Length: 495
Image (tube, rainbow, N blue to C red; front, side):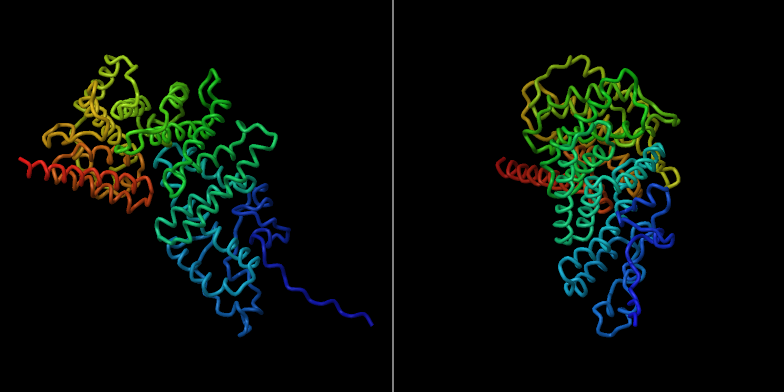
């Protein structure tokens, strides 16, 4: 007599879309190959959906008391606050995953945690690394491209996880999240190295370049990889040089425009560093690329009404950005004065005239605080810094942070007016182009009440973004203020 076939449990893996269509899913995150190739929505089940209900109903089953809430969503579904998600995952690790075999635990964590981290990247982190209100092709187009490329580029997939996990660590202060972020970062480097060894044309690979961009963003905004930024920048510069710099025409792809601006922004922040640092990366190794890239961007434009809204990363005139970088290098005293002093003076006077000619700043409401207004006022802050640095640039000045200026200085009063204008505007505080000018202007402040305005602004930026860059700026500024106060106290006692 033929034995009846033994009933088998249904497969509980794969995305919901493939399971509903009854096709095999390769289970790639965040978008499986089947959904990605057909441009279908790739929906994933909740953690409890992957457990056979016969196990759930058994009182001795390790799944019986599973604590992941039904409301915990995964990538592609509605998501509650990420701190609650991470708390739920951490709790589930303690009560459930410790009872699994190591291989099963790793697989469970992959299916539970990584989609949540991806969701945090989409919902929270991404909006903090690109300027609000820029061309939709930048804001939405780049995110769509990242999600599409993640399925086929493991280096990009792990770069996304590294950035988002590091940010979750800043929010929740879980040591495990920091360790996990560095693990993802290491995996991204490994996959990136394998991609570069394989015979290919890296200058045509958007996934490769996007992965590199996110790795140096991780170094700037995240924790533990700050010293790696120069090598990632050099890699991105090499790819962009092969791809774009020899072209006679301007840039015709939004992604390429974004990539060039991103590299220039991080060259600026890497070479300016902290004001108390007396040395830094070799400025000369970047300046040739800067001028070529700046000329390339000047030849490129898109169809928005405002040139500033065509800018996804920098948001202010690139020439002003470069002038601030040059004067900062002069203040560090590590760069010989090779530019024509008269040319620098003419540029500075031009920006001062812009400040004098601007209309009186008015208090603004949320309805009026549009991104273009953020860019306009950020440009004013950079112009104020350029004006003040120029006045302190002496042939044999001591290297170090900017010096305090009079409380009645017109540049200071105009800067304070900008900060007070946005003291209740969270959108402004989340906008990263204001980080460096706020930090730098703090060194010029001499009045206690003006320092309090800067302190409040920097603290709000940290509270709303949790970027390591802001934390470094706060520490450097507070240390300088404390040192100056101590020096003034000693001077008053000595007199």
